Length: 208
Image (cartoon, rainbow, N blue to C red; front, side):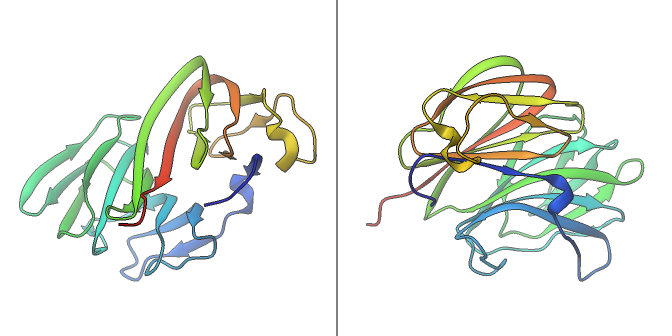
């Protein structure tokens, strides 16, 4: 995980779209740990997926995932033989990423916010929030805040020197749709949204 006090802004416009092998959609990675890790060796990985066609999800051994519908009517999933309807926007759903999962779109393409993490190495919690609230990244924890499609602007104001990783200045930072803020090092800040934002807390489990 990143060390020290740091606030990094990750703009949606900087992300590369990677096509799926089955041609059913594209994925844009927001952040991953370790940085630069591939889909085979990440500890955690957060991304946006544009699903354009019915078909199977990729299987990731040892991985749990949290999926949040951000755009579209939703999906009818079959997870390890059990039906799972994903039809409500901004409602995170947890399920294993290492079992066969098939997807049928309910009414056209969707955009999903995805959190994937190795269950034996990482703790991860995802919440979708709205309005004004105070948040803190605890020492040793990474906090990722992502403005979802409904949010015209999200402002994070560092209160404990989090500006060190953002050009050496604190104060409000505006985030457009799908922009993200990555916070580490025990920082506290105020969050204001005009729509919904996803807040993901990530921590590496102690080695046994």
